[in-house]
Image (cartoon, rainbow, N blue to C red; front, side, top):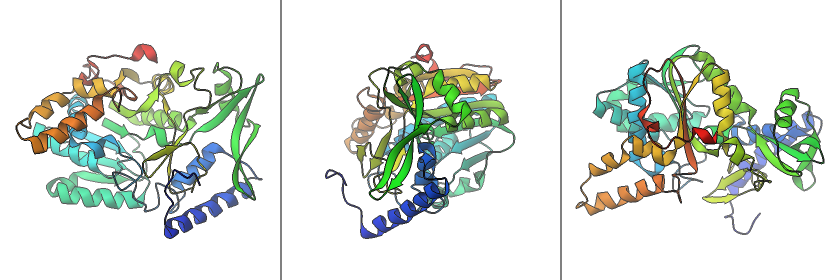
Length: 384
């Protein structure tokens, strides 16, 4: 274990051992090797054992990382203003993918109520029973009078009109690791040895993955990620969306920056107790595993699936365009106890040195007559 990372409790370590055994058995059943995408899928989503499907606390100061909704209520309130525009042009329904603690849903619903733009329904697609319970508890406590508008799903609806919101969902989808070297392309996967999980490369068996990898121009001896799961999600949403828009908020780049020559080791990153590191084999089940989003891939997939690119910009521009500064003005600067923390939160959400530039927002939609306010300034579509 890296010396800089805190040791887990005995109970947590035992949980990780159970997941390790589960993945090791899967490797054995697959002939001794699995793709990294499969490893990541099991590490994050194995029923009852994976990072997102077990009961460990993940969000906020007591967890492993802080997301924008956890950082400030102004984030959800500002996103709600954009969502209000979307549902006004389509249908009064909201679908949130991967709602985390439920704080984004709570903040958005409260703001939509203030705006007089409450949806008829707010659906949450969540794979974790533990997180569903936490979301239900938070929403019952904060908005009991709106609770009957919220519904939990275990699959995407067959047909949908309205707004779809996904904050930090794409980065947690399983990725394939590809190695371009000596004019050949191999896939970096996972095997088991007496010392634990190890990297092992193999010829790419998936014809579609090989075709995608062959179209990417990178320097020799270059390792990076391809997220076929993100393509599948966008395609599924596009097939179901009749009218409305999808909002994806996440950290990432356009393809040219994603596959930049200097980014030769990829973007894979793990988060454990507010420490970031690059070892996905460290205590499986106790840490998040993520990769940056290739937003060019998301845009192209959406367009190929029949949607229109409605906007692509930085989180800073998106929040400023939707009036986060006006929401801050609701609190008097003379009220230092409330104003100073909110001001610091806005700074972190919008500063280029914090979340403002690394995080991007992309909107894809169908039958949307009017432009979305969140993309009025700061268009970055040229970078896709």
